[in-house]
Image (cartoon, rainbow, N blue to C red; front, side, top):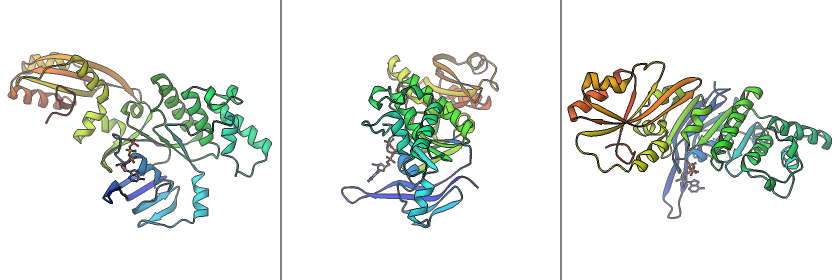
Length: 353
Ligand SMILES: Nc1ncnc2c1ncn2[C@@H]1O[C@H](COP(=O)(O)OP(=O)(O)OP(=O)(O)O)[C@@H](O)[C@H]1O
């Protein structure tokens, strides 16, 4: 049994012209205790709406929702009392892109605010808030105001506040999207550390695959309200099935940026661009040299990158292969046989169709 179980969840909205928008469409998802589960997709895919159903900030129109062993919704109807829901919500912390801190009170008061209904005495609340700030390495800023802190520091305050009621689950809704790369790394590393120290389960919504690759063990890809692919991070990265997933897992942004900066003119019939993703442990030979030797195609490298997925080095290459359509077919077959996930792209970095 998962700590979060969503079954056939739908969320429908009526837009201004009373047209129904299926923001979440028949989503079933199980998050196990201790997972860091990434939910990725482009803007408008339905990620926020989906995770807001976990604590019923968003009521679903259909489906079942069970969290921490308690049924929240059955067949689209709320079956938990509002009073119990309030208690259950305390076990689900949330952090957001814009931090949502109160600017007129200090950092420590922001954290203490979450303990208002905890039944603790003022002194205990203060002590606990300071401990939480220590946990996120920000105790020295306790008496500062949020505006006096950097974005990354403000997010750490928000994390301390989200952990105040000792939740089992932490939902991170684009928590690093407003941060620079260095702060993003720090926050992601902190989330992983907190998960281990506090035995948390984390649901991380993001449009950045790089964030998922850094800390998640599992990932689901959303498109137009549906989960189009999910599984362990390794499986989804190395064996993507859906074509959108294939372009997403390659860190499509860097690939697209590279192609934009190369400003390639339209390719001729004998040229094709491929994104190749593979585990360096499994693909030890030089595939570019082998392509020349075995298939007789000339391959130029346009972009290359190695990332660690849970300590396993994963390579991403962007290559331009010259050869007629027969040779291109042989190239794809050879690479696939070698265990490389191959995705053909056009000169703009989008999926080739
Ligand atoms: N309250 C609402 N009323 C009407 N439509 C909504 C409402 N909330 C979301 N939507 C629509 O539902 C769809 C999914 O939105 P959602 O915010 O969940 O996507 P997202 O993947 O989280 O994107 P983003 O990262 O941009 O927030 C969008 O088409 C959005 O316009």
